Amino acid sequence: MQVSVTDVHKKYGSRAALDGVSFELGRGITGLLGPNGAGKTTLLRCLATVLAPDRGRLEIFGLDPDRPSERTEIRRRLGYLPQEPGFYRNFTCFDFIDYLAILKEHVDRSDRHNEVRRVLALTGLTDRSTTKIRKLSGGMRRRLALAQSLLGSPGLLVLDEPTAGLDPELRFRFRELITELSADRVVFLSTHQTEDVAAICDRVIVLDSGRARYDGTPSGLAELARGNVWLSNDRPASARIYWRMANGQYRAVGKPPPNVDMLEPTIEDGYVMLVGAAGLGEEPAAA
Amino acid sequence: MTWHIDQPTMNRYEEGGLDRVAASSLEAHTNQCGQCRSLVSVDPGIFELQWLKIADRIEVGRRGLIERALERSGVPDHIARVVALSPALRASFVLAVLLVLVFAAAASTSNPGAGSYRIFLIVAPLLPVAGVAMAFGKLVDPAHELTLASPIDAFRLLLWRAAAVLTVSLGAAFLFWPVVPAPSTVGFAAWVIPAFALTLTTLALSSRFEPSVGSGIVTAGWLLVILPALDSGNPFGAYAQALSLGLAFVAGVLFVLRRDHFNRKGQS
Image 1 (tube, each protein chain N blue to C red):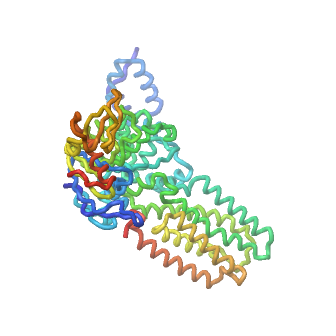
Image 2 (spheres, rainbow over the protein chains, first blue to last red):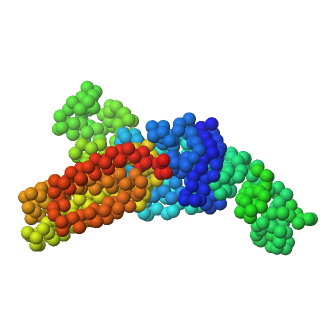
């Protein structure tokens, strides 16, 4: 395994953001799902080596981020897209990526510029290279942020909500790019989009209140809701969550009443069963 | 065409062996003559190189004044870039430093002989402190999180930027020093040593707090100490200088010892 997280704890004041999280990551795409405040960003910041855990052990490519020299080596092999990457608004796309390439030790000017052109092309921003960042749309900025994470072809990509703010076409392009990249590297991404998890992730971890509540395949997550998703003609009183569909029927998730039409569960249903149960203080579904 | 270029002449041209007149004549002729154009050997690498040079001219933005000055003085371009990007080195900060110095110098010279020169001595050491506050950290650097995650040593980056800030702010203050009507017993070092001490203290505190918070603490501490001391003798005398040196030493040691705290948040 290329990334190992063992019993990691992190507290902000008295609140535990991470409460004993353990897992391992290998090649491929692993998705991280969880409600707001579950600790996803804290976990990703720890993996990106910008935040030290209070307790527990991280190992990335066999290296220990607590040791400065090993941390530097990890960072050479890391691509990180933070949830809110800051931009120098008056920079052009090219200059911004060029600056970050310098920080990533691309010292030779000519090689560096070629690398900048490469990642701009990968993210479809070649024709925007001389555009100032302040003139870019939110989706374009997200692509620019993704471009910087690809500098130097890193072996580990840590992406915090990479598809947030992207329109459907860009999301598809992102999926295409990430699946291509994941063939020979570790990709760990957090998202609120369960469709992204279903579409590209080999594995999903659900984090809730700082703990990993599920670690398995996306289809396994959907299976958690099997027998708990049904159709109803009336407002379903016993449902944990439900919504009215275009045809006037209700799609409900929760404990079904007798004699209802059961539906094939989705990842979203499994996620609701898992996190909803925890949120309501009930016994969680078996993970 | 009544004449054509022979191969040896073309070879000399390609090797740069023709003088300017002969080369221009050859170029004008090959533009018109397909037969002679076919003698020109084509190296795709040259075109690629030329194209990249053109792309660089188009894509790479114009460098700022400080960045160009750093590059001209022999600083490698990548270091010049990361240093010059500090908000503390933007024109607005340099202008603010100059304005503060103008006012401090004006206040000091308006009532010479009454010890008003001390206004300048109080203000000048705080300029690099303000510069450090604007040199590094998440409050002033939008890409701070990305900087932290990169392999560049954040401690070294802060050192480069602090050195640049010190040069700019102390250099500007030095220019104003001759117009301040200070007694001959108060020399340039009177405020330079406290400036170093305050800057190093700010840097040391920045390993625990944001640099802007550290500089706020240092500024408040400096004013609390210096203002009452103005009424009770010379706060820039030998004793005060020795204390400043001691503070600079302790802060410098702490700054170096805690260097890893600039590279990772929450480091124990």
